Length: 158
Image (cartoon, rainbow, N blue to C red; front, side):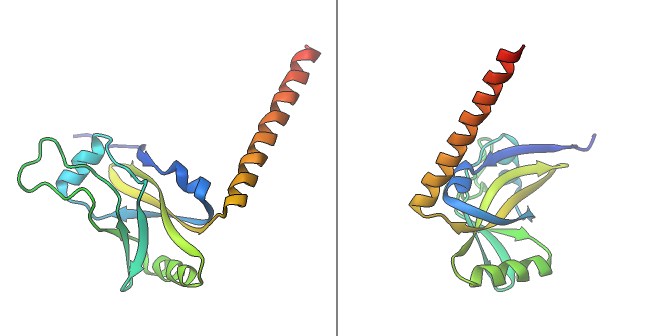
């Protein structure tokens, strides 16, 4: 059987980039059961309420919704369970120190398969205040308008 190659994104947390200022990102493996992997391969997952934390020198992903596998039997997994993330010890220590500083949290950004292995991209992030969110939206809108004006000017020159 040929090995799976490339990256297949299962779920993204678009709201995270709106609600948080992203400092660092890390790629972590996930410890999953068979029915969870099959459900993910079907493209079903939600990172909306998910968060990550460090406990006892281990990284954990919690409240990520992976629905039960349709063809699963009595040994199907619970949809919202605590899942262990696989990171290097140095990364865990670095993340732990950063989150203990205060104001920082761990947020899952994407859930995907990389060469057939389930991965999650997590970010050390700081929560944005309401005025920060408005300012970010305003900057994005201004950039879009400037790009449109430049594109309009290029079309006039033709």
